[in-house]
Each structure stands twice: as C-alpha cells, then as structure tokens.
Image (cartoon, rainbow, N blue to C red; front, side):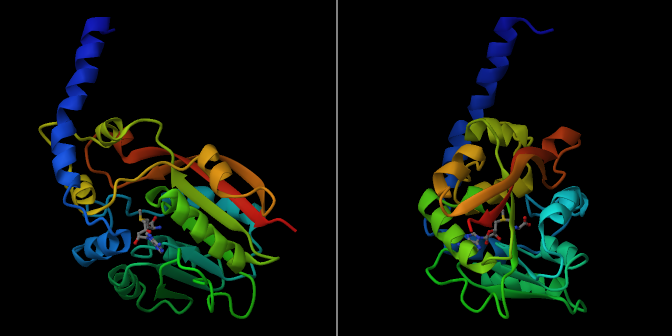
Length: 269
Ligand SMILES: C[S@@+](CC[C@H](N)C(=O)[O-])C[C@H]1O[C@@H](n2cnc3c(N)ncnc32)[C@H](O)[C@@H]1O
C-alpha cells in the first residue's frame, strides 16, 4: 500500500498534463457542428485501434443493452439512431430491428456510415442537426419510432440537450421508446483523460485528436436527465449504470471502459 505522501505526489503528477490539455483544446472550433464535421472529415479509419476514441470496434457494448431493449422496444417499429457517427451502432441494431435510420449533424460522418453499410438494405443514414426545431420532421414516416442514443447528450450543452430531446419526443410519439447510454464519469477533465490512459509524456492518439478537434465533453447521468427532461412530459421506465466501451488505446484493459448511465423513457401519456 502506498503512503499518504506518495498518493498525494501521484495525484499531483496527474495535473502536470493540464497546460498541454489547455493548449490542445484551444484549437477546437467553438461552433459544435463545425467541430464535429471537421473531426469526421479527417477520420481515415474506424474500428478497434483506429482514430475514433469511442469506437471499440466490437458489438459487445450493444449486445449488453439487448436485454433492456427487448424489455421495452416494440420490435416491429423502426429505430432512429440519433447522433449515429460512423453508424456502427445503427448497423448492429439493424440485426434486430426491421429498419434503422442513423442521423448525424456531420455530413462526413453520414457519408462514412453509408460506405460502411454498403450491401445492407435495412439501414440508411441522413445528415441533420437534431437540436434544430422541427428536426424530427420526415424521420417518423409512417409512424412512431424507437430512438437509440449513445454518447451524444454528454457532448451537448444543456440547451442543446433539451432541444434534441424535444425532437426525440416528437419522434417516439405514443408507441415508441427511447434508449440512451451516456458517459457519466465522475471526475474533472484531467481525471477523465488520465483514466483513458493519458499522462504528461503521452496522450494516446485517438484521445489527442478528440481533445484537439472537439468541444470538451461533460457527463450525463441521473441528475442531468432530471434537469433536461421534464417529468410531466417523460416517463422514466428503467435506468442504471452502463459501461461505455472506447477504443482500446493502451494495454491496460480498464482504460478503455468508461463508467456510464443508461435510461429508457417514454412520452408521458
Ligand atoms: C461521441 S460521438 C457518438 C457517435 C455514435 N453514437 C457512437 O456511439 O458511435 C457523438 C456524435 O454525435 C453527433 N452529434 C453532435 N451533435 C449533434 C447534433 N446536434 N445532431 C446530430 N448529431 C450530433 C456527432 O457528430 C458525433 O457523431
């Protein structure tokens, strides 16, 4: 066991990375939609050991959600994957549901998702900012849909979270259900990047890219949910802890697992 002095020294050592974090994150565009599209435009490869921080390259995480999805999703309804990125989760969901539509603010993400889904006939993609008023229009033909959201709310500010969920409310209608899974790391940005394997001497490349190009993420757990989703409009059916699986960037297995939160919601009838 380490002495209290050694623990303090080790905690302080973590913070030596702070100046580097500040200087890297200064370069990220302030406009979130621009930042995301530039990020995706520069991605040459997805999957495990690629540049995409939140892509574990396996279906392990989504398969872990399957039991919860089966409990709540009407299996006959199409699914809209909001903030689909390169569409890996949309493709996995297309194995269980009749039709999946992935929607993302980044046209470059959508182009990549389409390429990666070539040959699949029940998954399609569309570029749209899901925080814009009325963004759900045309996405729910012919009727209500289930909505899947993974790793999107924690990258938005509170106003955008509320705006996006307002559109989601429209999408699910009376029959649909929302499943969301989000990063809910309880710590500051230095602790977060340290958890993902960064030190002053080395920041894993996918993490460095995200810090340099994207707005600083937050966390999304039960408190954030309660702040953003008015109880008079939403019914919380189930929630709990989740494990968000990121790209395996270091040899330490725990580094690529981020504490998360999942929730299942329906429009209040
Ligand atoms: C951390 S990534 C997660 C991607 C995907 N859900 C996954 O888990 O692989 C967040 C995604 O949300 C998208 N996004 C951010 N703001 C958005 C918005 N306003 N409307 C739609 N998509 C958005 C980004 O372009 C990005 O692809």
